[in-house]
Length: 366
Image 1 (cartoon, helix red, strand yellow):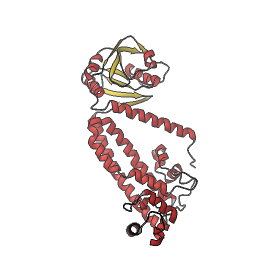
Image 2 (cartoon, one colour):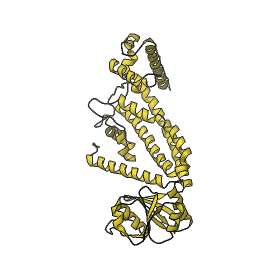
Image 3 (cartoon, one colour):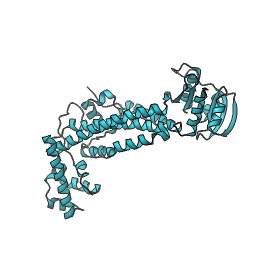
Image 4 (tube, helix red, strand yellow):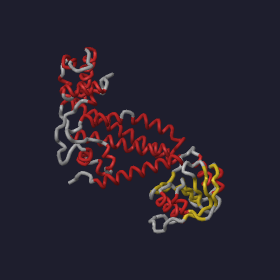
């Protein structure tokens, strides 16, 4: 039986999120179109190896032996020429200056690493010990690797990233369609007042799947740099309205004295995410095998479809009329009793809710 996630698992999730953010930032500074990536590409094309530390602190200072303290402005050509020497290159934290070149780095040999080559083993240990990202260029393989806090990330060429992002965009389009189908079905059940925990969990599950693909493609956009503009535009078109849908869903089914949130689903494994029960428990919808428990929608998502209806007014309507079923059963006089509702607005609300009900009826027939 699945139970709530212990607090130490939540801590691990926070650590993972911090690591991912560091990796995203590091990928951004070595993305195509940046001066640093220009310099690294020059090193690759020249078939020269390199080890570059992206920052300087007291730990790096203590690990450096030999070499030269040069403190010169960073340029791609300077990086390429300095890489011809043996030893590591150390940059300022803002990457605008080259502080040292030709230095030997002496990290703690007791730090565990799975790397085999001398340059990569040193880079991994230095990144772990200093907390700063380290980049290596392999002279034999002509590849670039990024080390961040024990994580090794192989830097892909733009054409490889574009191929992956295209596949991910196609998958995102399919998942977005499935999310839309699940949302339409949920609307039909809400009108009929037949919603269960499992129904809401199904929509939350598809929302998280879309968000995972969105995060993956976001990573490709960052790595692509100037080459990722078109991918970014396609991504934005596919995810428009996703955050608003998630927010409205959470407000519609927030349990009394509890907390329904889609955010914790990010910590679920892929296997758990396809299990409605695991999704319901993680999101705070359920505590056991009660997927068939009936739920009543408050109506935030449905009222959002009524044109030109301010959110604060929608909140007052829901509070006064007691949820979606109360909205469907409200007369014009009931609506007029709510602060901020005039006759024109009351008619607009009633017509909008009628359209919602008719759409749900058509869905039921289908």
